[in-house]
Amino acid sequence: MLFRIEDVAGFSPNLRSYGSAPEIRLEKDRVDAYIAEKIRDQVNGAEKRDALSYSQSLAVCLLKYNRFTDNELHFFGANPEVKQIMDYVFYRTRKGNFREKRYSLAERVSGAPLFRGDGIIFLRGFLVDAADNRLLDAYLNRYAGAGRKAYASPEKDREVIALNPPGGWVIREHMDAVYTLYALQLRYGFLKQPEWAGALAGEVRAMDPFRFAAAPGEQEAAAQLICYLSRFWSREERISRRIYSDQTRQEHLSMCFDPILQFDAILNEPFEEAYGLCRQYNLQALSWLFWDFCARYLAESGGL
Image 1: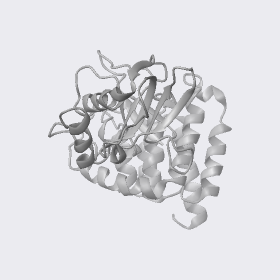
Image 2: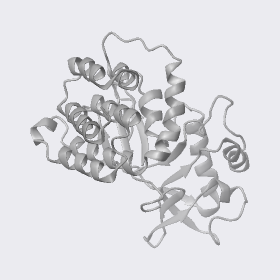
Image 3: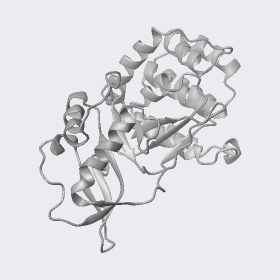
Image 4: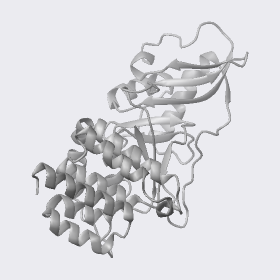
């Protein structure tokens, strides 16, 4: 899956569109230059940019780009183990046929023509892995005339650049529960066994819908996150350990025992003590389900 934090809080929220951008009419020999410009604007943080940045790590979004835990989590499936949509452009031909074509930075730096012959296409979007700084610089210098700025490091955030991405799933009302789920998995690994993860996803889907009355789609979104953390945890964990280590060096100031502090408590306190602390501040039924399910797992596996 690919993840991003959508800035929806504060006085000037930055609201972006998903899956609804108009097609762009391009000459075939201009496609590389157009995509390179959009990628460069995004990674360099240009004031006006159309593309969006996603991370291949959930930890990056939770711990680095949502320090006040008041924004939305957006995510959609793009794993190699399912339908491969990474490193592709999506377009429509003049005859109205919808097509997708592989578009990886490693292949594009070779300079080989992307399309045969002349003509036009109608670009609908793209999804490109930009998580290699050296390769990205070579690509941008070739097609955009200049590379990334010195401070920009898509490699560090395992960044993927998308234009007109699908909507996927959104979680806003239950972000506290997301932090709880991730921290419990990071500390206890209670989703490593597929049967346990499947059981928890089933319990989430079986919850009374009134618990999600303010955000009905978040019930299934939570189940999808459980499945992701179970199936791809070894890869996610390798990234999250470094991210968590980096963030613990930064002082976190808060007026309450917010999800970041609860996250820290889960990782650093005994289970019962962390449970007691978090129970006082986290009032979401979804969070309680995660706590209780993890306690059952630890009791049955001898972890408590």
